[in-house]
Every structure is written in C-alpha cells, then in structure tokens.
Image 1 (cartoon, rainbow, N blue to C red):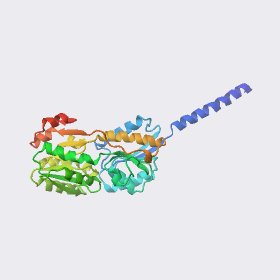
Image 2: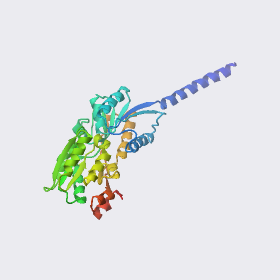
Image 3: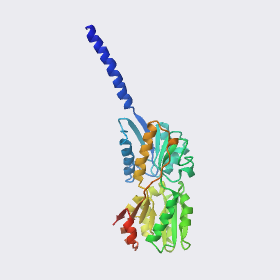
Image 4: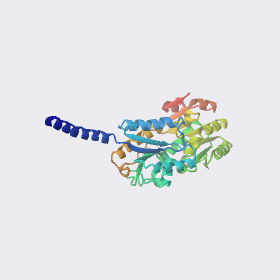
Length: 328
C-alpha cells in the first residue's frame, strides 16, 4: 500500500469513529418504569391514558425501542399485586418512575423508592407528604395533581341542580386512598336540609352494601370518589345505582360514558400527556425537586341524558348549554 493511501485510510478511520460514537451516544437507551393502580392493560380506560403518555414522550423525541425502554406494570384492582409490582419495578432500577395515580405513588413510597418520580392523578400531594410544597416539592417527587379540593362543593351543587329533591348524599370512597379529604368541604357546601353519609370501603361487597344503605334513604344521590377500587368496579357501581334509581356523580368522564348520570373533573389523558413533559425534563438533567406541582386549568362537565331520562330527571336547559359533552 502506498504511503499516501495508508494515511488517507487511517485519517478516514479517525474521522468516522467519533461520528459513530456520537451517534451511539445520541441514541443511548434510557429506562423508565410506569405503575398504574386499579387498571389492567386490557381495560378500555387504560389504553387512552397510556397512549397519551406515550404521545407526550414521542413529541419530545423519546421513541420506544430506539432511545427509550419503558416497562409498564398493570396490577389491576389487586392490592397484593400492586405491592409486588412496585417492588419489581424498583428492582429494575429505571432512571425515572411514573406513578399513574395516588395508589401507585403510595405503593412506591411504601417500597422505599428513592428514584426520581413523576405522578399524575394525585389529589393532595402535600397532605400525603409526598412533596414539601406545591411550588418547591423538594425530595425526588413532583407531578400533576388531580384537582384542588375546592372543586368538591361544585359536585354537590351540580347534583342538587340536576336532582333538586335530593335530601341525602351518600359518598363512597376507597379506604386505601386519600379521597376522604373531600368530605369536610362537601359537607360544608350542603344546605341544612341535605344530609351527608360517608362510607369507607375495602371491597366490592362493601361497595354494594353501602349503595344499598344509601338507596334506602329518601331522595338520595350518590357520589363515588376516585380510587382504584372504584375504577376496578365501576361497571357494577353504575349498574347498581341505576337499579336503585340513584343519581350518580363521579369526577371522571368514563363513569358518565358507562351510564353514570354526571361527571365533572379533569381530562385524565391531559394529565398523562403533561406528566411526560416532566419525565422528559428529568431525563435531560433537571431535578424533580425543582419542578412545581401543577393543577388542571380546565374541568369538563359530562351529562348522560339517557340516564337522566331513565331516572325521571329533567336536566335544566341552562346546564345542558354549559356541558362539554351530552350523552344521548
């Protein structure tokens, strides 16, 4: 080989190798773990949420199989599986963890997670002790709160507007969740002629017994607070509420779509999509402690007109006009 050809070959190799190394570094595989309590992978409520989370990541350049390894854990409604999956997720040592709701976040905390964590659908992160403050979370956790507690009186107001004869509102909440924090505000919002009954439940039979007791009251209505137990049993709750002719309120849209009377709350897909922005920022070097907790800026009112007719209720035209969606 001639000397000039040899120099050209060596020089070319020197040039090519750094470029290859840079490309490899740019496409380094990053790992995140996802835990979502109360849902299974096949649940129709699960697919749009995780799809929104993936869309949020993809819009920021994170593509599964190319530069992102994402493991998603679906424990369904099983508390034992939730604890087991939280432990399993942490053992894989992802760079960032996404907790898809309060129960998932609490399971990770119980498993002594020290990994950077982003959450969505958490009602009271300060009260739960997962962040120090809204503006400055501190620690290793931040994310997107479900809503502020002052939205709770709006639920009672909407129920009374739709069912003005309501004399008793029964509230069912998951004993493992933090939703009971709504109760004082709900009670404060009620007029003196309306009673509030609350039921902490641990299982589907307890849910069924609570609904039967609420239905035994005169002119009763039902509010189901969010939690993995309610999510896993939402179809049974709706069916029993309709059988007992109970106007049913729930914060999430899918309850109204499945036959609940009314829902008023944030779009969960937006929460998951927004959570991806914090995962992105942490992967790029920011700390969860420096990312403020954010709250929804918009709540959606969904009314199931078909269910209202089945219950013999006439929805005020003014309320229908303000609804974001009417199901007929």
